[in-house]
Structures are given as structure tokens and as C-alpha cells.
Image 1 (tube, rainbow, N blue to C red):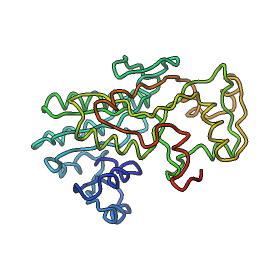
Image 2 (image 1 turned 60 degrees about the vertical axis):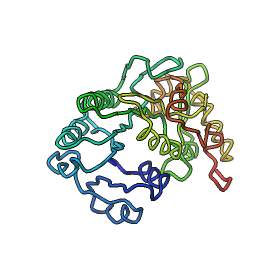
Image 3 (image 1 turned 90 degrees about the vertical axis):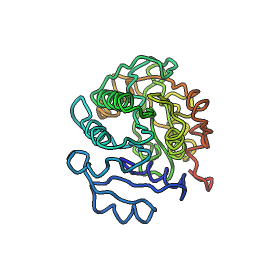
Image 4 (image 1 turned 135 degrees about the vertical axis):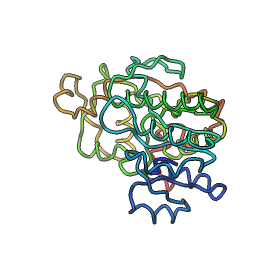
Length: 288
């Protein structure tokens, strides 16, 4: 596993003791936590390709969850990893976790995996490059390299995994006529989908990993506020939002799309434990 954070550890818990996981880490502080979770830590740094050579020929399957760098238009980390994976016998499968941001603004239309990519930010463009690197490597080595495109990840037990903090701050959302569709996946369902893609993903195939929620962003925050017993956020026109909100948040409010997840269900066989945010925002104990 490359990039074993919250989602990666959920994959480990989902699978249990059926496999032996090895996880790349550049932080010595995480070594003991990995071992406590039954994961064998491998120290290395994606930004220092020479430290990755030990990964060559080591794994049967590779789950790549690491993000690209925070600057630039390409992902040299994925490029470095695929070069290492070609040094010896390649793995039997690779899954790359990308983002639905690669589709850009679709003006609220339904989006299947066949839609042309139109990234509108450098962040999304870096993901497009990483996808291309993974798929070219897969074709060159004869290895199935699947892409899972992921929207907003949430979970009550995930750090920053719910809208509660934004609601408590009273952060505004767009008025209805300016609002955009938003898409979500519970972290546990994402973990299950990643695992299935490692075994069922077709060669160089793309999968939208999203739940069945069909809400605009403001309605999503209204729903969460009602669940938490908090005031609904104020609604503002887009012009006012530009003046009040940070650039990163505005970027999410500038793209509208509705993800079609039928391929994930039919080909990967994913059965969503949390099919919508109304069920997923509530913890297993029944409390928000």
C-alpha cells in the first residue's frame, strides 16, 4: 500500500488477516502504529525515488492511495513508483485512487466513466497525469491497472469527516439558484471498493466510487445541520461567496456533477453499507 492513511487502515480492517499488508511510509513515527495494525512498514519517500527500489518485485498487488505533490501539473511520485515496479516482476494488479475532480464542471449532468476529462484546477490536472502514467504502465507490463475516481470522503469517525465544524462556524453556502451538485462516499465503503478493485478491476478500467446521494451542496449541509441539531447555514449568492470564502472551498462550489456509480456496482460487486449521507452521517451507535 502506497499512502496508508485513514482509508488505507480501513482497507486493512476490512480485509482482516487474509493478506499480509506492507505499507510505504516516510515517517518513522508511524512505524509502531502500522505494526499494531498488522501492517509491515517499509520506510521510503515518494519524493526520493532512490528510497523506493526495495519495493520492486515485493508485492502481489499494489493499492496506491498517496496524493500528488501540492504544486505543478504532473505527478512525479506516480512516475517514480511505476519505474520501480518495472525493475522486477510486476505485481498482478494495481489500483490508483484518483478524484472525480478530473471531470471538471459538468453543469449538473450525470457523469459516467466514459466522459471526456476536463480538469479545471492544477490539483485535478496532476491527477489526470497520474492516471495516465498508471494506465500506460499497465499496458506496457500487461498488468491490470484500475482507476477509482473518488468524490468527497466522509465518516463520523474520520478526522474532519463531517460538516459539523463548518456548521458550527456558520460558514455560508450558495443560494439555491447558484448551488451545485455534490458527491460523497463513506470511508468504509471506499475501503471496500478499493479492495474489490484489487481483485475484480478490469485492465486499465475506470470506476466512479460514489454513493447514491443526489443532493446539492446547500441541501447536504442543511441535512447535516438537522441531524446535528445545529442551525442551517446561511445562503448567499455566488458573488458574496467569492468575497467570504477561501479559494479552496470556492473551487468545490464551482463544479457541479452527478456521479453514475452503476459500473462500480455491476463490475466490482460493491454493495454500499451507507448508500446515502443520511445514513452515513450517523455513527453506528445511532448518534451524529
